[in-house]
Image 1 (cartoon, rainbow, N blue to C red):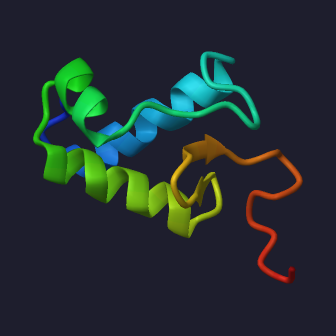
Image 2 (cartoon, one colour):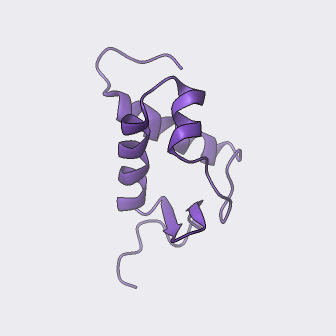
Image 3 (cartoon, rainbow, N blue to C red):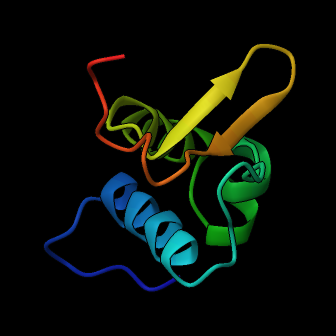
Length: 83
């Protein structure tokens, strides 16, 4: 993965995951790779992958299920903070 000089690595990783969702690589309800696999795939540290995943969890792009993994939110769930 190539990084822009003015972009933080965790932001670049989060943007790459968003791109993969937009391109249909990861679909709603589908699990996304965990920190270790993302780190290897994208050439970043596990901490960087973790920070990117946490940002996507915080903004509703992803959700996690304890003991199951991290999944892509359905489009109606993204940004829905009222429920």
